[in-house]
Length: 340
Image (cartoon, rainbow, N blue to C red; front, side):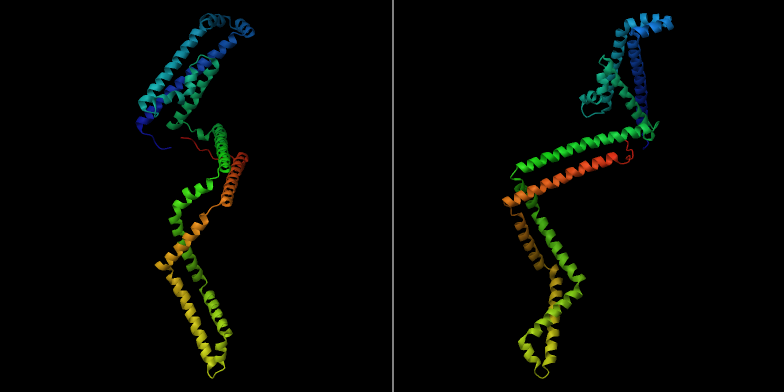
C-alpha cells in the first residue's frame, strides 16, 4: 500500500479514533438493551435478585425504571453522530452531492430509530473502523481467514448478480431480434455501409498480399506448371508438328517452346510485380466494391438468416456465461483482491 501524506494519515487516524469510540458506545448500548430485556424476564429476574440483591435493587431503581430515557440519550447521541459525520463529509467534499451521505451511511441513519432490531445495524461500523485501520496500515485484513471466506462469497455474489443481468439482457435482445423485421437492414445501413471504404481498402490490400505471398512461396511450382502447359499446347498444335518434319524443324520447335515458356514466366513475374501499381489497386478496389455491394444485398431470406445467426450467437454467449459461473463456483478459491 503506498505511503499516505502526513495530513491524510492524521485525518484517517482521527476518523479511526472516532469510529472506535462509536463502536464502543454501540456495544454498550446493545449490551444494555439485551441485559434490560433479560432483566424483565421473571425467572432470570428472580435468579438475579437472589444472587446479587444489591445490584438487582440498584439496577432496578436506577436503570430499568428509567431505561426509556436512557435509551433516548443513546438515540440522541447517535443522531448527533450522523449530523457530525454529514457535516464532516460536506467539509471534506467526500461525495458529489450533499444529500448522498444518508444513502451511503444508511445503517447509521436507521440505527437512530429507537428499535432494538435496527440498532444492531450500527454494528456495521466495525467494518468501517476496520477499513480505516487497513488504510492506516495498522492491520492487514487480507491475511485473515475470515476475510478470504467473506471475499470469496462476496465476489461470487457479485458475479452471480452480474451474470443474471447479462443473461436477462441477452434474452431481451433475442426477443427484440425475433420481433423486428428491420434489424438486418439497420445492421447493413448503420453498421456495414459506413465502413465500406475501410473494408474495401482492407480487402484489396489482403488480395494483393495473398497473390504476392502465394507467388513468392510457390514460384518454382507455378513456373514449372506454366512451362508444362505451354509445351503441351505446342505439342498438340498441328502446324508445329508439321514444322518438326522439316529439316532442322525439331530444333526450331524446341527454341519456340523455350521462348514461349520464358515469355509466359516473364508475364507472370511482371504481373505480380505490377501489383504495387495504381492500375492493380484500382482493379482490386473495383472488385472489392462489387463484392461488398453483392454481400450487402438483402432480401427476406437474408434477413431471416441473419436474425437466426444473431439469436444463435447470443444463445451461445448466454450458455458460456452460465457454464463459466458454475465452473468458478466449484473451482478453487480465487486470490483475494481487496477493494482498497
